[in-house]
Length: 210
Image (cartoon, rainbow, N blue to C red; front, side, top):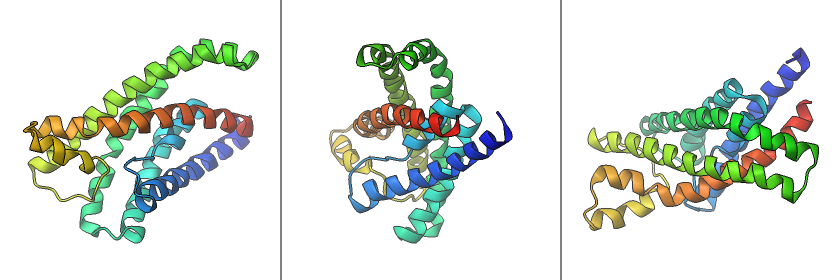
């Protein structure tokens, strides 16, 4: 990567982190939609610039989320550190995307040479597999983190999955299973948007840094 490209990719990391924070705040904070909407631009960076810049974008996003929770959403400062713990989910997702992208590249090469709906089907099939894997990884890792908070009685800000927890607990679903299963309906929608939307954005990013 040349010096100019390196600077442009770093700039994209910063812009993507702000994009994640802004989108999450608008969707979850202002509109009240029970989605995280917090990794679409991170996934885009994974597809266009690789592991290092994907992780960097995820960590920058996490820092910005803390500021959003304190300044814009008014959550107590002492609870906001818990938001950063979920950066573990982001890093795991980044690792998954960057590893799996190697399997997508052969289909992507065909698609980029002759862009069409037909040539995109190969890429789309691989993205669907990645979407399913991402749902599993994020739901399980996020559920384990949330379960640990409950286990040690750690206070944390409201999260979208809290909407689904009460119904599961009323049906005597164990706490660990509740922490994981409550995230699945959200992650099905959220990861689909993040994976397919992130891939689409990455194609635009690549034109900018080419």
